Length: 200
Image (cartoon, rainbow, N blue to C red):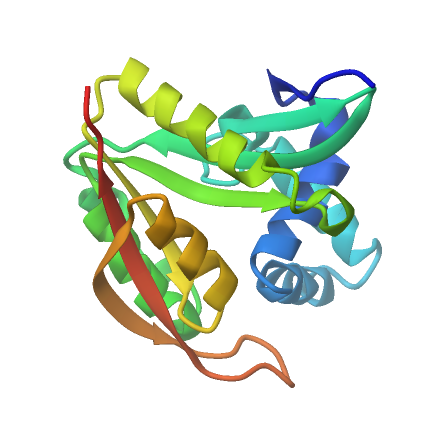
């Protein structure tokens, strides 16, 4: 069996990337895309909205920020991340978003001067094979190559497996904010901003 490979994402990976982003957010991204779908008259599917979002440039979930893990032509997982400028907080405009996004945006404003890990996700059938850890190592390698000395990420407190994974990988919580539901059936939660210092 071929070994797992890591490559920069391409436009043809947009559908997989949308699915993985929704998996990582436990359906939160899908709920946001559903709102966009309803706003635009419901002419396409929710995941078409998500797929198109991956193709847009200059935002956290753009495929230009994604690295995929793949094997024998199949996408197994992905990581999204980018280096934040020190003055990144000045680019955050909460007034452009719905109130439910305020807590997350406040934490994102604190990620300036770090390599921000926006998403890491692996399809369930490929979990338990060390792919998530390998993707995180690839992310740390990218961060070091850009001369970043710390990594940051935001995760929901209720996502206990992810929190444990990040803590095991050297991340520690440094701030928290409310995480209100964005759709019916979702529960209120707490966002955690986690940070990991990188050694040379």
